[in-house]
Image (spheres, rainbow, N blue to C red):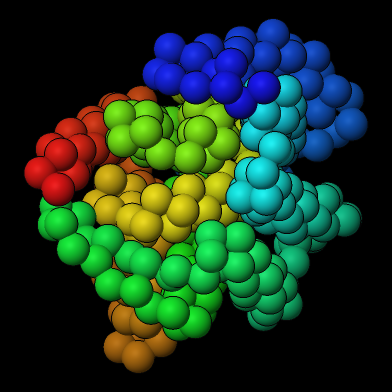
Length: 332
């Protein structure tokens, strides 16, 4: 089956099939989520300044990530994405972190004051899952543990140290994508752009076709989801989608030996996460806030930048970083 879909044209077919599956199944999925009353809860007790800019989003169903992960996994499986141990591990990353996000989403509907998983238990579960998946990838790839530096023809082999490093990439990327998922289409659009960049580089380099299948299926599903998630959103991604897709992005970058390149072409996610960390640290140690609201997109939103314009600008920055990143990679 894999030989059938090798090559750029066949990879594009996987991308289009995944996008089409999301678009075709989207209306039924949104109706099912609304019928189950999985509606995004908006609570602004800790941040009243967000209340005015979130008007109109009440009643929008969440957990649309079930559609994205379901469509991409089904298409990838049909295309041959489970025909190697590496492919099965990528699937485990998607479904494992997606399941954790789903649990967090469901707990938010546990009464009027549901808050999801508490911070410490969620972090501990994430770290444990990240280490298990990092060990699996390390053994499945022969224990090389190599990391390449973007724009350079050299890299370094970490050996067993690659496992904690990869676990850190899993934890950081999954939570960074989750933090970015705060505006209509922001996270899904940035994921589509970043995954497409990886797909382009991997297809041109002739790398493992099984991983390319997953990259194409996930990028296509994000594109299809934007049909419903773009402003004004008919459905939100939810933690299930953000965590699952973030882990998949981490796995693909690690398998391409380019997690540092991910920091460049996925810099939107990095900056969003750093803005939260800086805000928390400044408030704890200096008793003051750096941003009006964190993550960064809410800082600009509260400042008066319209949501559609803000989303478009973030996407444009992401595209510019991808173009520069791909140009650097071509120099290797």
